[in-house]
Amino acid sequence: MRLFSLAGRNMKEIYRDPISLILGIGMPVLLILLFTSIGKGAPVDIFMVDMLVPAVAIFSFGFLIMFSATLLVKDRQSAFLTRLLAAPLTSSDFILAYILPFIPFALLQIAASMVAGVALGMSFTSGTFYSLAILIPVAVICIGIGMVLGSLFTENQVAAAGSIIIVVISLFSGAWMDLEMVGGIFEKIGYILPFAHAVDASRAVINGAQLSAVSDKLYWIVSYLVVFICAGILSFWWKTKR
Amino acid sequence: MSGMDIDKKLAVRTEGLTKQFGKNRLAVDNLDLDIKKGEIFSLLGPNGAGKTTTIKMLCCLLKPTGGTARIMGLDILKNPAKIKQIINVSPQETAVAPHLSVLENLVLVGQIYGLSGREAKRRAYRLIELMSLNERLRDPANKLSGGLLRRLSIAMALISDPKVLFLDEPTLGLDPKSRKTLWSLIRYLRGKKTVLLTTHYLEEADALADRIAIIDQGRLVALGTSEELKRQLGGMQVMTVKADSLSPAAMKNLKKIYPQTAIADSHLIIKAEKLDFNKVVDLLRGEGVKINWLSMKEPTLDEIYLKITGRSRDNEII
Ligand SMILES: Nc1ncnc2c1ncn2[C@@H]1O[C@H](COP(=O)(O)OP(=O)(O)O)[C@@H](O)[C@H]1O
Ligand SMILES: [Mg+2]
Image (tube, rainbow over all chains, first blue to last red):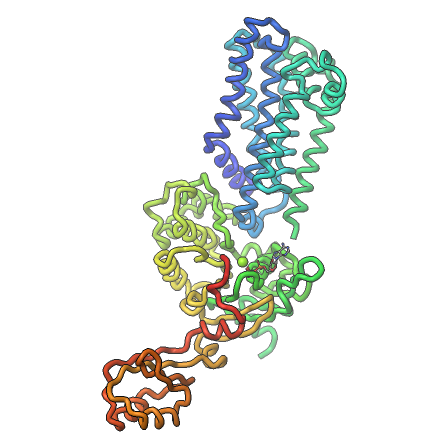
């Protein structure tokens, strides 16, 4: 009950902020519209709608980092967190309340990208659903990164670090360019980070591959998931321990 | 009185409570305080005196580096979980959820303290009434003015019906009118709740507190009721007289009784720890002095505060 009250509050805090709706949900739709229309003039693989949708969804999770970090850092700096920490809540109440509300938000982001994609001619198959098994863990990685930033940084630092990470995701995820074609350091770093694996895997699954065919990429993603959830929990715990 | 009996009367007892940050920043230094049940107790001190640090330790948010404290008989080192159920705090910063309405903020805190949604709502409406927030009930908190935010913040701390309420600088940065309103609301709590209120405004401690502890650089420097402090610490009563035909003889006789008698701005000013109004008037009349106007001022905590902390609060950067 206590957990759900706090999680509910955090949810309202996100959904009532027009910026988060515009950036988090409006932006991916806009990008899909934009790139598919570019793709019509210059037929490149990455601008095909079924290639574009998973890439845009993953790119839009960058904003999740921003939103979850901002919520936490604002609560820290306004001492709202002090009020909560003085209340009889457990550590797991806190951690879950700052993670769970972002999952439906990520689902909305995915849904927005997919609806825009289907409207522009993406086929809707069982692979569309299977891609959730890749996209949701990536969203949770981003929430974990957000918790780390929100626990350790100030509001300005969060804004700066968040923007940098969004740039990193767009450069190294292979969302807007084929990493194998670029090669070199881009390809190396890209495939050390989880985002390019996620973009590749979800593109494959949406285009008919089985999840088992991308299992090595899935393991890579899940490892990052574990690391960042732990890092998020640890930094929150470290910052709020008495 | 045995230890048990003392504990029954006390809401808070600190024993050598100490907090050191890093190697050499002693924020709270060996603090011994007793706060009685139902009392409004003020921790008064300039910025950096250690007020917030003290509150954080008592709320089990910071671990003391020395000593301990008991809240309603429970040790802050051993029983933080139990203590958290029976206290609540309105932090120095406003600490509200910006996108939630006044009502939602209150219900949220109620539920976090384990109330059912219904009970939280019932209490929320009562507190909204008490704090005169009715008209703003559905407004998001980020649309409220400073004064209303403070009222909301205090209402949020009251909704769990805590046995001990901590208010950290409840009127910091408010305009005089909002401050007066908040004072009357806090006064309403007198006798109903144990309140530990910190402030660096002297008049606030003077106006609200049953007892005042003055702290400076983490140390307790004076303790008592406002009256006791004024007496203990030698505050002066001051009489100002505007008079015609004041003779040197009258001045001389007056100085015999009250050595600190002087003329300033063509007013006769008499200072003493205890002034006898009739004695002064009789003496002046006896000397044929015509009194046109007269005022008498009680000693203020201001002088005492200045004396103790060695600096004026006007110089502080808030
Ligand atoms: N987390 C901290 N780390 C280091 N020093 C601190 C910390 N919190 C407070 N202090 C220092 O402890 C002293 C007391 O601070 P504080 O309790 O906030 O004073 P007050 O609330 O009376 O203004 C100040 O010198 C302050 O700089
Ligand atoms: Mg303070």
